[in-house]
Amino acid sequence: MLKDKVVIITGASSGIGLAAARAFAHKGAKIVLAARRLDKLLEIDKELSSVTEVLSIKTDVSSESDCKNLIEQTIARFGRADILVNNAGISMRAMFKDLDLSVIKRLMDVNFWGTVYCTKYALPHILKTHGSIVGVISIAGFKGLPARTGYSSSKFAIYGFLDTLRVEHLKDDLHVMIFAPGFTASNIREEALVSDGSRQGETPRDEASMMTADECARHLIKGIEKRKAQIVLTPVGKLTVILNKFFPRLVDRLEYNYMKKEPDSPLK
Image: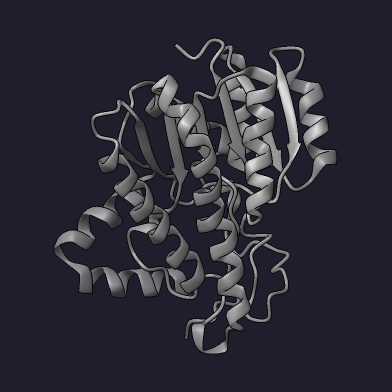
């Protein structure tokens, strides 16, 4: 069902976005790659062009004009848009009391507003094709994650935005999916911001023990094919969401102790 569909993926230069681009391409979809690093996109473009049609567009999703340009160039090239995967995002790790507020603003600009901008300009075209709009959030979009106030806030906001969008278009056959991977091996923790806005540079977690980006991408595509409203991945992620409904105070303690075990954790 994905053959010849036009799929726009933000944050496509690495991690889940790159894995999704490859997976969609091998199912016959036409791929629009969006990210800030054009050099990296062009490498991926060269790889995937032997499989399908690819369009690479340098995009900073925190810029409304960049997001508008992304959709306009997609329509100019392919004449349609079927699937938008709002995957671009950044993380952070710092206690709120130590945090420069510019860090939260940056996360909201990229994670939340990037999703809003791209969705705003893609929506009229995706409504025509009865397609899909996907938001890649996190378990942090269901339960506040300590030392990640900006990250959790942005993911909760995306959840609320897309959940509302689904209801607004309930009778338009628009598919809206909220996709929460849980801890997945990617470079998002290396690029995470710390209290002063500089990059963390090294992941505090054992990436090798996590779900791979490729496996995550397979779940994402399966969810789109089945037009799922929501997907939560990993046993820890699913357990967190379920337990939090019934035992929120218990989850507070479990989560605090779990995150405190990270190397150099700001939690005491």
